[in-house]
Length: 247
Image 1 (cartoon, rainbow, N blue to C red):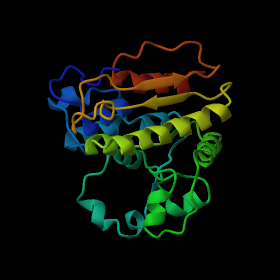
Image 2: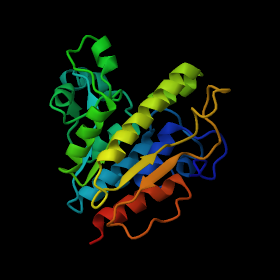
Image 3: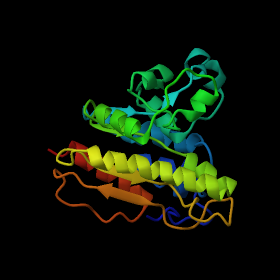
């Protein structure tokens, strides 16, 4: 998919994520690609057009599967003056709860490192998860909600680090999770999408993002008659919204 969105410069996460989640061209709105966290204009888009909010207005249930560490809940004042990621902002504006570390233990959420290795290294008492464990968590929660979203960004970190061994390891972890999901998903009633907001890890000659198309893949539910032609990041929101609200 095109991540450049008609705007010069390298695609970035704040504008890319906002465009994916709202169906509105965030880069064109602010006249540039914005890295990191959404600014006021992008946050306004997420507040008014975020997919979670739009779907909830149609009584379609949604869940952000990524778990947050205790400081996010126990010391919220730390985050009051900080910009949050587009996904976090979208979830907040929709008024949805955030997942805790305890919910990982209860197999109702995942950390951004689904293996729990990072948490264990930070002295949290966690059991390591395999790709199969993580896949089962996602599939189980998908039976309780119409839409679940899991965000994995360690591939982005590996690309910025220009570390081939790290990149290979992260790609393998993503492949293992996808393989475990594809072996378990009942595609009679479930649709799986993998969406990236920009190029990065595919070219370790540079530590920045790339101008390459963003990766996207869809495994179609039998309930979906046909798939549209996905041209840009803007096409994700209207497709998901249409699938979940039709019929």
